[in-house]
Length: 485
Image (cartoon, rainbow, N blue to C red; front, side, top):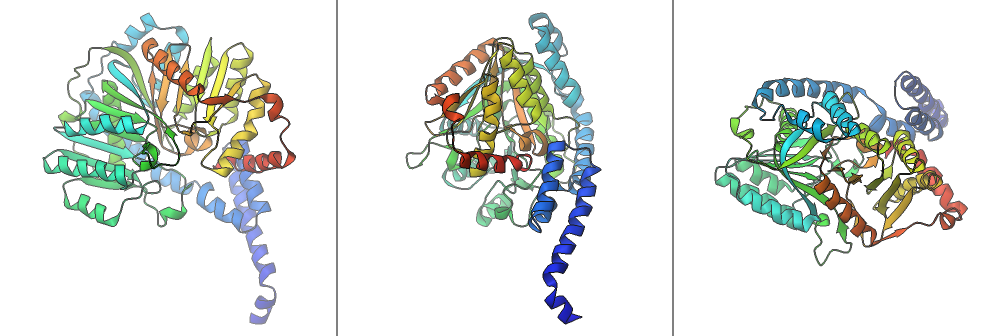
């Protein structure tokens, strides 16, 4: 028997692989998931022995998601129900907006309110912040002024130069009696054991989001918390694309210029950010949170800037941010200006951009000239011809790497947040965006976008279509993996 196993081990192994692969294929076929994603998994399982099973085990199975996030959804609903009466959001916000806005904008507001308990907030001040160095200057100043609580949730939090300054400041405020809660993604973040001990020894509560055994080797593990949120005293909120890492700050010694966008918000929209933080905290801390009236103080902002906070993730019934982006593109009348570091879209977004452009809307997209991922770069390139065919203008940012995740439409609507234009952001990770219905802010975002185009190159379709066959082969290969990236 042993001799038979030794002499036929490869045949046995490959047979066992394909038995398991076929079981996995049948399981996938019975799931109601995107056909493109289904086909990708089937090809990977059948064409790549052993490796395909590993990919499916890490990314394809839903049992972990269903078990964990059904619980999270229950916790979310319980917490939201318990704090709804504490929200100081004016009931007339939508009524006011209906009198001022176009019909399509009102429908977008209603879409999110029905999908994700995302109320339209009316009284807000908002500041668009360009680049990490400017964000951290303002953030540190606000944290220094904190009197009651600081709530922090980041995908990437490292105790490098800027991260250490950030964490030291939190430790200082905790010593002063300010309540600090810190949530960080276990895959994206890297905090030393020494710093974690210091956080534990202080009064700072800190928890990783969905810990993994080997975070260094799971950079694309599913269901990560990709959000970047800070809330200070329930009055000031930060949200956008900038994580806590030296990469995001343009220090003189950095090799690459990093272009990014963030928001500083005061007013009623901060309450919605607070709710999103608390629902996540309820999950990561695994204990019932004690609600405090100071989390939802009386709003002091009198400026009218309508804002909705849209959140999406594996625990939401709908792809809220993707649906908002899709609807706003197909209802645009003049222009759609998109900036994203990763453009690996689903069919809905591609179709929306094509339809808008072919109907006369000026559709532009700004992507990095060189991505920080080889496979993401070629996967992005595989979608460009579909855009060129519909006369969408594609710009490559040449000054450095653009990580901004923004969209501005028709001088009336802007969204800034954490969501990339890719499968992972739309369907897998936890994301959060601010949707701003303001001409003033839209014009600022538009000018910011046009300034970035000054540092970009508009791609020429005639040159692009003459690229070599090897490049096309790379694109085709990487596109095969698009639903998994």
